[in-house]
Length: 199
Image (cartoon, rainbow, N blue to C red; front, side, top):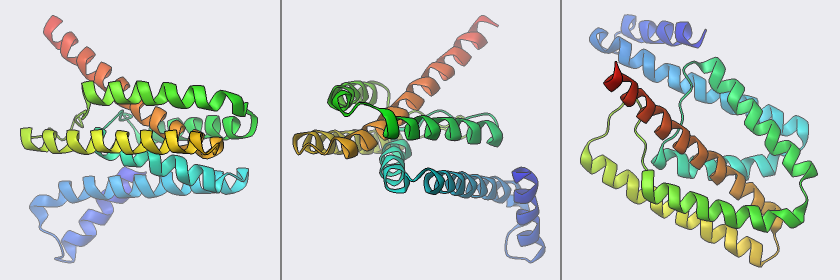
């Protein structure tokens, strides 16, 4: 559905002479990403309002995006799969917010710091399969990734020190999900390369 809508949008702009016809596919791809992002954002927003976790979700999403934008991560093959993964991740977050023993948070937080720092230093950034990066872009994104994970880690440590364990968890969860997506995509890409070599 999103693909058809994006193609229709691109076609409209071409017909209105607002875009060049030779770039129609590029415009359609960009529109599809925008529509998918907006839809996923609305779904999470609605879920957070229904479950009474708007502020926790906002902190979690900001932490996730801050690292994801520079480090990269897993990309589902379809928008439906992407949406389902997002819903599952958010539902788990809501369950944790409501039922997780607060005494566990510092242990989870410090594990997340160690896990994320090592992963980012070793593997970030992970390229999008459809958008290879040039060497200077890789270095720039790597710098951003390291800065982001250090900033988030310091924030988690300060919040734990101040005994703001709930907010420490919200940030930790966002970082954990982002880094896990990075590692999954890295493994997936290496598996694809290995299978091509074998084939």
